[in-house]
Image (tube, rainbow, N blue to C red; front, side, top):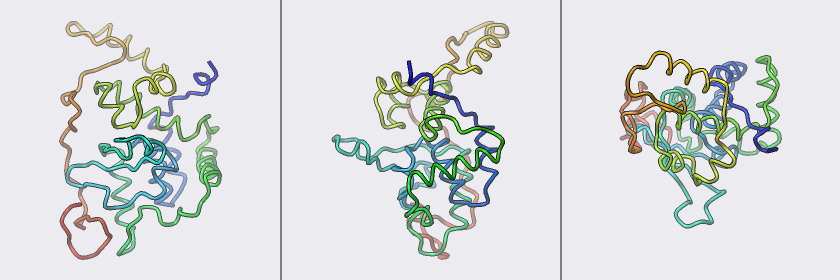
Length: 231
């Protein structure tokens, strides 16, 4: 259908090329939060506050304006994996003392202007902007989480939508999926994993322990030179 035709898997390699086209750390973080955190952009990103990041647990609490009218869907907790963590740490290191917002320079940037900035970066990287510019970044991350073996109910909780919504509007078949399936079919002798899925040691929704943030500052809900406990 028309929606399927507008879907595009936006690889991490392409996104990294796009992010490299700007020196604006806040703009880098916006693209990274949409692609690697699967946040709705701009509604879940623009007013994101530092205190919603738990650096020790490597999670973030995302406020969800789109679904806040539904009881229990006002916010959700999303894991922070390494690909996003590096940009959040970069942003923290550059933040002014006393800052509460991650993106103070983007509070008055309109939705269309923000999309225009993304398009400029994409063109600089030598690409054409994909359709559904922000949603396809978010959808790509959902695809990756499913392929990494996380249970559907866990992924949907991180995404902030139902499995029905995921099936109708987000999940897609991309070229790498078939290639990986073919490779698995020729090399695996036991425990074959069909449908481009692979197991993950924390399939119950818990987050794989990762290295602690490597920053000189102890991070809290407000940027400060003085050490604080983790948020």
